[in-house]
Image 1 (cartoon, rainbow, N blue to C red):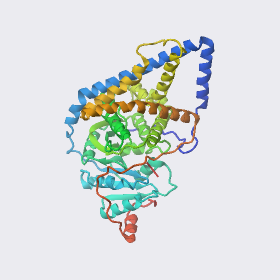
Image 2: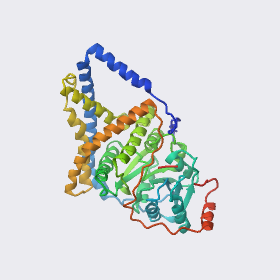
Image 3: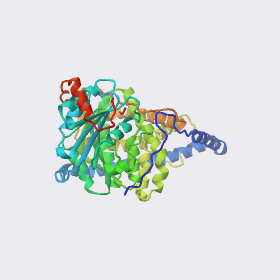
Image 4: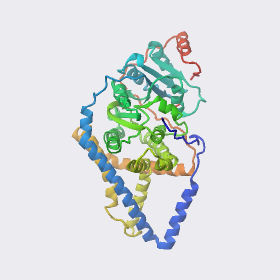
Length: 479
């Protein structure tokens, strides 16, 4: 039985509910504290509070790093336990919008997945693409009857969530697995994901994503290491210590009945994955993480694309905090430690904002402005970076990356600075209620090594392929 955690109704792409009054309240409180206690004393107390917050996150990072270093290799070595004996009916869903550079590799990988044919449905949604994505998908569908292609109208709306919800309405399966258009999963990924659903308490399962184009640019190399840390250390630590990993939006599985009880993916958010994570947990089900269920994806190659991607992640994650923190604290399905970890998880895209404030306070101290921190447990600069670097170092070890790659950690210094800027911009825009909608991540397709699409089919064949689709599917939106 799943208790539905309702999704917020203010839609992304329209003017969002603003929180300008809260920003005004912060300014009034700060000015009032300056007047009542003085500038130096007030800034000292703020610095001390930040030290406590950073200390808590430092220990969180450290605990994740230790747990991954201690147990992750053993779990990876036991990757094949139970993969052959459980194969419930399963549907793979992918949403595509203008993905002609990567769609051939993705479809070829899907058709090569190891899973019983009679228990597997493959559905790819062409979300009103204006390039050759739709034609390539139709060519694949005409050459292999296992693939079903749905075409959405340009005004269908809802972004990736809307496209996935349209596909969900057309399938009958126990489990739904989602990939993104640039993803190329390993052949056994489905079997490794679904084995966790033997436990009826499990509502969703997350696999591990690995960057496949880390050699294309220095930024891609930095993101490659970031993913090692994020999946082999951070997500693993949340699973090992709290059994609270996040559903990541791609290379992940969810029970169909749980998904439908929650009214599908939330089209009113730009981070449908974090939103669904919270609703699954608050509905009484659990999320699991499998580091052996590996899927390869493409990292962005330029700082402008990195900014847009991380801004979207920060904007959506911060909105999830505003939408769900009260419900999470009241949830009967989460224990005390789980509520604490859920709050810390929801705050992760606010921490860079606080880091920016901390750096400003440190700079002011250099000019003699601001008193000593009320809680000076550790130097502020140490707390800002030590925890994440511990996770990054363990990620390099577990990923068995060559020694010289350790020098790539230097690239995280500007990456941290960019994270502060993107999270701060997202926070201010979200609190102010500035208009924002789904921003697609551009691909290069340079490292997709799969075969090209079949030759285009004749018009009559395409029409037949489309007529064979379930009723109610329209011709011609998502990542």
